[in-house]
Image 1 (cartoon, rainbow, N blue to C red):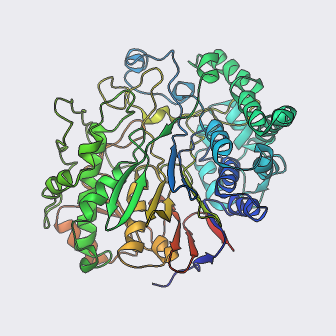
Image 2 (cartoon, rainbow, N blue to C red):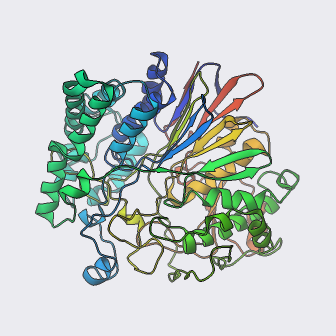
Image 3 (cartoon, rainbow, N blue to C red):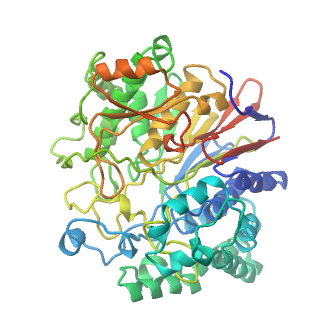
Length: 571
């Protein structure tokens, strides 16, 4: 399959990122002798500047790391928790059962601690070294590009709700135009302050310097700006919420897909949806169906519906919810659920959940009423790295800017990820003190023969797992090169309650890019899918990046989605 861009290949190191300048900054770290974690942290911090409309420096940064020296997989949640002042019925009592835009969606910012924790344990460089490019992009600016300009222009009224957001995103009261230099001076000063604090403590060692950078954010001047803003606006964040916070090391969940171990993040995010769906799909001869044929699109869509039904009813922060993970990931359960996929008829709505081992007695979540079709895109970005030692880094940094305010003087939105919780106290993703929202960002990393094979991920909210699975299958079932696999036309079901407040539900809706054959769409409609068409190329279908290792030849291949400004660099 011909692609619009070449697959980028290298024998030493390769990086792919959601913005080309972030990819270049991370590549410079690799060229300077840094490892995959150093480069990934660098690129991730840059994305929080370069794609700040969709990713906050003070947002979330879930990641999976593969360490080649001991073949160990590490997952860092990179996800904040609800402040201690919240109560499970807070939004029912005070906001009519809704989680309103603004400071009330704020959970503890996790990305800074995630970057520092990864760097401290698995990197080799200082925070100042890996943050230097991001500081330059923020302080000196970067050229405004089409997707970011379009997003800010469309959301101009959202930014105008808060003076601090208007000042940050609407310079001179107007949306920035393509080619204009976009400067974020406050954000540059915030990151520089952390670097300065690190330098002051570095005489005591690298770890002391990184801790000083962490304290600068969670206990120092940056924390005080967040707390002052919450005090002035009635927010719930308090000093102890920030000072006591640390990201968590979590086990991955996995599927064995024909000899490939596909590792995803745990039930604190939607990550288990990927192995649950792959366990269903490995029971079919997908290649014989034909890529994007009627039978293939139908089968993958119905498998996804089953996986999302289980996500809705069972998946939530495992520190608060009994998640029957072993049962959900068992082959026995997949065999049972596969019988729910009818070859000639689509489920007209979200299917009922299964009852895997361990779910006995667990309550089921309520299913909201369907809404008129008005699909809204998710935010986020993605990056992945493999270095010359075989280490791999997969990360999905996120947190949008249009539904929560910029902290005055800090230049960032303090994580508004509370939008992915539910106000219903009985839902597995309900709010509670110290509880994590169920995150949509969910990086993945596949292994073969105990070595890194394919880190992959994408932005796109509820589209993420769906785009990731299609790209994975394009490579590992249909034999596409990684760039062609990413560029291939995609489809996405919305037949489940969405992750973002107000959790819209569109039963039966199946969106497809117009490059999929029209007769295929007509045949799918005859099977009961409510088919609607995206443009031929749309960023609404996600924007995956992926790397793939030819383990026999020792060559790393990289792909990045032209639907957004993502790029690959390698050597």
